[in-house]
Length: 221
Image (cartoon, rainbow, N blue to C red):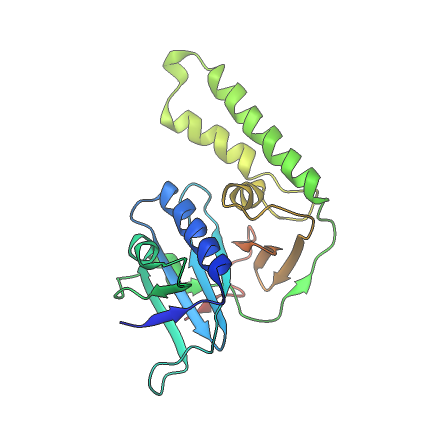
């Protein structure tokens, strides 16, 4: 079994926290791992948000297994979490699983450029809080006979599909960042590459396809 040696106990703890949050939304979650050199990227897709989440993890030494110098595999998030040893700063790579459709279409690796207009971090957190409060207020105000799954989903889509300050970034991407523990501190940036937008923070990123962008900018790997 391949063992990843993480940079330190903090990296191991952050990886475990990210996997735990993903599993809270989907107990059968899968993640795609890509490692090259001393960088490991962990991709996930919490179903409640319809976005891709990316957690970058530092490795203690370049990944290498025999003559292979890169790692690219889709695995069970639960099995990976169970293998994380925070005190030893290691994680064992579980056996590969049949990847969900999203795992075959990832954001491009390069070509990202900064986009203007992203509000300050505290404004983003306020936006999420206000959106959650609006959803709760509107759904709790429904008559019992109108409180159907279809109506709840309709209200949710209306709120979470709104864009942030004209940037094109849907509110659901910011909500995902907040829920996964990414939206901390004061260093967030918005970037684009082809049809993709990426909200990047020191703790992880959220990527989403822009509405109406067609198939441009896909990276099928």
